[in-house]
Image 1 (cartoon, rainbow, N blue to C red):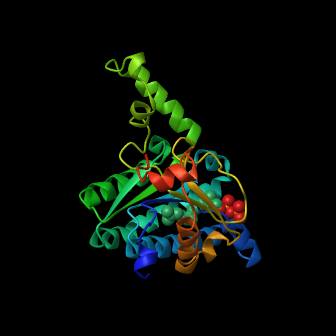
Image 2: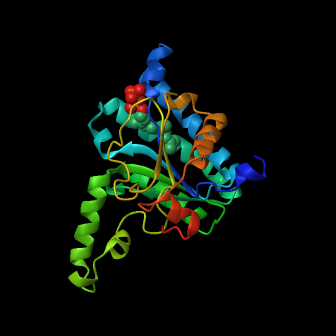
Length: 247
Ligand code: FPP
């Protein structure tokens, strides 16, 4: 990346990694092998984001709705996640990457939960980049979870509830909203991902199937983001005259 390209980088990129199943069909192999190739694309993307200087990367690895997939596929995805943690966590740590998750982790098996807990503990002080994995995650579930926690919190008065207080009860309370949301696989939908947080995200859709996603594809998405004018509901004139952009 030259100097111009490395300015105005998205601070937070979120990705809906879609298309593993179609990639598997295209190559006449089983779905799990498609997901395995998808896990390889995760490695490539994490490394690329770290190199480029992206501060937060959120990956939609397993949605709340994915629990309804055939048992074998759920098992396969969980094994791939375990394998990823086993093989990658030391490398992530060496690169200064902090691992976090969002979602209903209670639904996962104890062994997977323990691995995640250990990975988080090991990397908790890292500051170069946050790799945030959405696991057993649903945007609507997250909002309901936040509402329940607000109601339970006796310190919060109704009059004090606003967008800022509300966001503190979301799973993503310690990170900025995504600047750029990428979806691979050619579908144009959000699939219950980060519903609150993407209010002003720039959306980028590509037909590329997730296992074929490369650093070049990522740079293309970032370049598209950099060409856009983010207005946050203001006019183009206001943006030019007033560089103050709210988060
Ligand atoms: C969507 O493709 C993808 C998923 C449901 C799982 C994503 C998981 C990985 C990329 C691998 C494991 C993750 C980590 C973090 C190691 P799909 O199966 O819906 O594809 P299709 O729409 O073509 O059928």
